[in-house]
Length: 601
Ligand code: C2E
Ligand code: MG
Ligand code: MG
Image 1 (cartoon, rainbow, N blue to C red):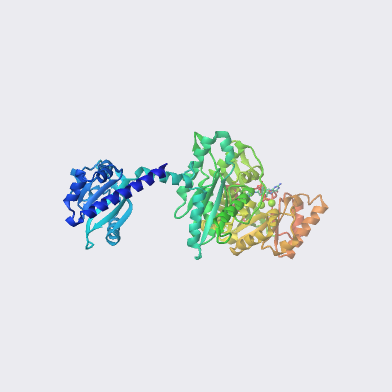
Image 2: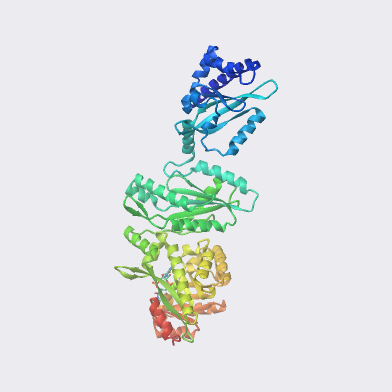
């Protein structure tokens, strides 16, 4: 319907212009801007032409060679509000809206001077002050010598039409709930970016975001609230992404962020981390306090694929890995694995608050040199300081933190606090000791682990040799190739690595030999039964010998009595940790212990 009207207008305009040209032509001989011609138009001597010109819906303006208006038709007045009295003798600049820079008009006039015509859209102002968009074509009438006699402008008001067209285009390329670009627009932009990075040494990152368990919010609060939440999330995301990044909604609870022109692939990890953090603070929808986490998968052009469609598909696959690894994390295409668990909701909410509002604390358990009795290190063990239930041990909430996707935030918090504390003790003049921090599988698999730790060390001022990372045997053995890369990276930074809970997993001796680790930590289940169980004694003895053969040091955890200590010392286990010496202590108590007993025996 719309296009038909436009077509008719065009045909009309063309015939109107043709008529005008013909008659101006036939009056040319009478000279420059011949008044008889305008007289002819006005008095309607040529009835047909006059009728067309006056009833055409397009505005017509004729000026002389100096752009002084000589004639306007009725439609001109209808569109602009200016009458003959207002404008004849003046220039059409009277209508200028000020929206176009002077170069715009200079370009237009230079086209007209060169080719004799110009067509395009101009923002003008009506007599009542309102701006409007006109689509105008300007042609020149020349005399026989080629000098301009008149300029004829034929225009129509396209304000509404353009608005409609824009709306239609917007709808075709945007999501109606969030007003973000949709898949079509995203793929177009990706293709354009690929063309521009094609021969450079830069990367484009595609981040596939899927909100964790968003369906639950939709199911409990309804779709309208779900939509409002999506819009708020979209706004928050848009606010954090700068430069050339595009964020698109892919339907449901999926978003895709494309960042072209990255100097390094690592940069995408920082962006993912930023997005995860950005979503940690609560959303308030209809008086509900809602928490949202997101799983992110990342692919890179040109490393992973060359076509937008494939890049999105790979980022999507990586996102599934992030989900499997416990949600609220990001994964690069081609890495990671882990099964999730289930937990009740209210506990989840209070743990979430504890982690986000620092309702956690760290207890420190000393690690002792078995021969000298010196405190050589402390293990940082997290506690949830619950307002009603007191200190809660990690076994009760670490699996939940993994399930709700907050384990990486928790681990990062612990790591940071531990480094701050270790550096503080050194500054207070205590002999430097190691601080051991446990890392979850998920944290260990974060692609930017190395840079995160490096940053934490530099921010807290702790030298890397005083930081030890404890990884359980099962974490290390779950993906040996990947582990190897990460461990080497940590080793190169000068950090110590300890293999926690050793003996309960299934270490391949072959791997153990190649792993860049410093210490093996004998699991407390073997230590516990040293006095009663000859098998456990044999196992402990074997682990110690094995470690020494591999030039690794050994620490026994869960040492509670003298018999255990005696056996361990006898077999030259270097270090001891357990209730016999100290339970894990709050920081003040640990500091007192460092003051009172720098040498325990
Ligand atoms: P783990 O790394 O093997 O830590 C040793 C656990 O043994 C600690 O339990 C400690 O309190 C306990 N323990 C120490 N000495 C003795 C003893 O003589 N006898 C007995 N029966 N137990 C002793 P906790 O603090 O409950 O931690 C349990 C586990 O939670 C840790 O095992 C570690 O895997 C995990 N964990 C603790 N803090 C963190 C953390 O910040 N991040 C992560 N990801 N995991 C943590
Ligand atoms: Mg440990
Ligand atoms: Mg352990």
